[in-house]
Picture 1 (cartoon, rainbow, N blue to C red):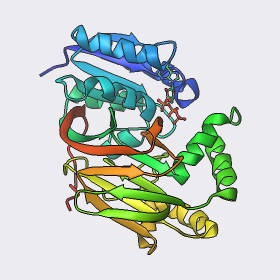
Picture 2: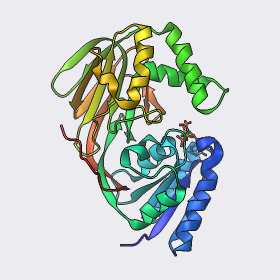
Picture 3: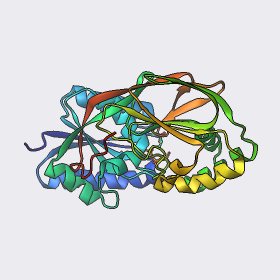
Amino acid sequence: MGLEHVAVLVNPVAGGGRALGEGRRAAARFRAVGVRVELLTGAGPAETADLAAQAVSSGATELVACGGDGIVHLALQTVAGTSCTLGVIPAGTGNDIARSLGIPRKSTDQAVDLILAGPVRTIDLGRAGDRWFGAVVASGFDSRVNDRANRMTWPRGRMRYNLAIIAVLASFRPIQFRIELDDQVIEGPAMLVAVGNGPSYGGGMRICPNASMSDGRLDVTIVSRMSRAKLARLFPSVYRGRHLRYPEVLTYRSRRVEVQAPGVSAYADGELVAPLPLTCVAVPDALRVFAPAMVAPVRG
Ligand SMILES: Nc1ncnc2c1ncn2[C@@H]1O[C@H](COP(=O)(O)OP(=O)(O)OP(=O)(O)O)[C@@H](O)[C@H]1O
């Protein structure tokens, strides 16, 4: 079946402003093959969210998010649990949700062509409190880094995070966590707790490397107490999922995960959701998304 009514939702600030041009390019490509398309972009995230909700309630059958994980996260709040299919044009800094789904990230034309070709997967989403998420909920060291980076106005992009990591690492102390899973409770000092519907965050850091978006469960990675020097050494290994080799790194799988820790905030798909405590739940088959068929399903 062909595309009916496509709404392209653009985050104009994503990718350092690159997303706006990519959104226009995508809309032109849809139009060129006769697809009815509208380009939506708000002055801020709240207006963009309103435009998405209006588009879907007035009949858009495909909502295409153009930008990074932030705009995909925003689009999820509208399309999850509906028959509207999500498309992704990756044009942000991290693009972890697109990465997990095998959506082309180097070329807008290829990302549009995938949508035009039409393979649709139905995948799980996570629910963190009252928000949907596609990739990872992070708390602990990484949420402190996000808090810090958000307070900085300079520099931009990746370098801001690198500086924030160094600043937070300098004084970081393990945090007392309590994590409730389906069948057990884990308590103790830890550096970070990540709850993954998908495997990666932060631009390809595979913190929950075995997470599957179709197993009806969330993967939990706990980096328990270690020295700051060891945490600094562990970081680069996360890109390949090799951190699981450290004895301090523990992994679990659960339908429901409740995370508690004093004075810690949680980020979902890179967006601030709430201070802990937070309950995350896997919601099977919550999203229809244009994505290539999965090559090697991860089961556990
Ligand atoms: N007009 C807007 N529409 C949508 N989102 C916006 C808008 N202005 C600012 N934002 C914010 O932009 C942030 C980043 O969005 P996104 O992830 O799409 O881009 P990015 O370049 O990958 O960003 P980041 O560097 O944070 O990874 C989100 O937190 C979102 O709330």
